[in-house]
Image (cartoon, rainbow, N blue to C red; front, side):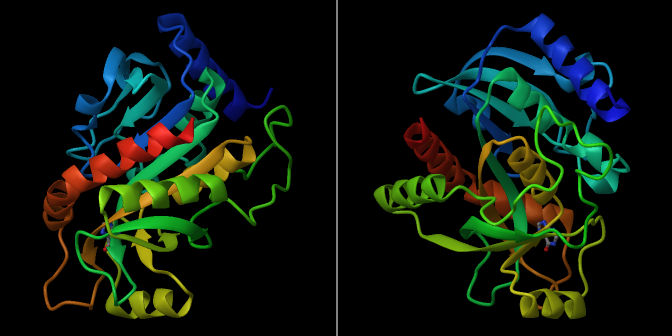
Length: 274
Ligand code: HPA
């Protein structure tokens, strides 16, 4: 087995030693969903730091642990905190947690994040269903030996975000009276925010939102045959779209303000997934 596969198998085995929980749905909680634990009946928590070799976040507000529990009877695993490529981790480490959650049993992955709005019709606080992504600016997480037991060398990416799951999220939004935007998410490496010229370029490329996560995780999950979906919280309009400079604090504050709606949408969507 190659070194990357050995690493995630070793992490998986350590998690398995600590829990026999078998999640159906995996949820990656982005900014603003930090208090999501209150939505689930938590059976067990596992701080990432207790898993040797597991990537641990260095960003304030991104402290990390797995939460295993039930959402309306559905077994879920939530990632409270994720690592980002800009922290210096290899991209294969960035997607390692998603690999582990699949090995634990999760067949569905819901990715969430805070993102900058690139589409001029968006406002801070909007929620956006991710319909597709642009991954061209970050390294592909599948570079390296291909773990044939998990997926093929050249995986199709023509429908990364599962159409049926998208419909369920739309339905949940309608039922909850939540205005849901839709669009294409582009991942950049960060950690610097973009320049206004870069945002104009992204708009020309067809991006509606920009952020520093999610896409590499979606690629790895799709490669492993997971059904993937994603929701962005538009925490700010991207660089150059307002007169104000961007800051991490603004992103966090806006994400926190949108949290009650975001939480409701995630919960009501997941209830429809299984
Ligand atoms: N750019 C990149 N990542 C982000 C932004 C942004 O404007 N907002 C939240 N994450």
